Image (tube, rainbow, N blue to C red; front, side, top):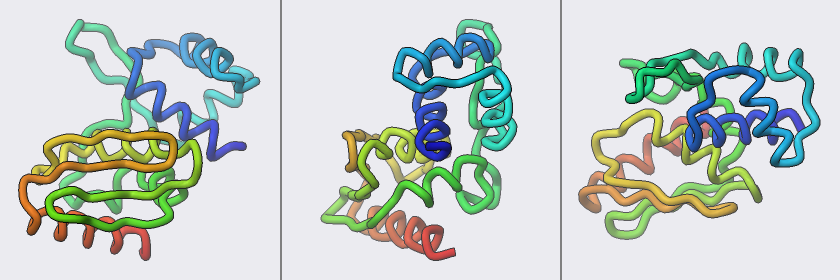
Length: 151
């Protein structure tokens, strides 16, 4: 339940401008998660969420920017590795299979990293499609993700 809740938190902060813990609690309640302020506070700390200034000038929860040494030290890598079953590619498209209901959170982790080779992502319930610039970049990107999963 904790991993699902934290995955939903990552999905919510990537989809909505969440300014306060109260806003986050209300969104989680909307999606059927019965949470307390203490639980949400602990999740924020464990996910190492930060507040960043949005384009509208408000401070909202975020996973932060990409670290210089890549995905392995990224704050959302735990959720990603717990969500993903398999990674593969075909031509210039990477495909990630996830446990049911976890694709949005894993996709939010990928999007937050702003990978140079990624043109765009789309997530369903258990599958993510990632469009890369070339087949070579899709192969390289897939290899990086596999290494991260096996770490």
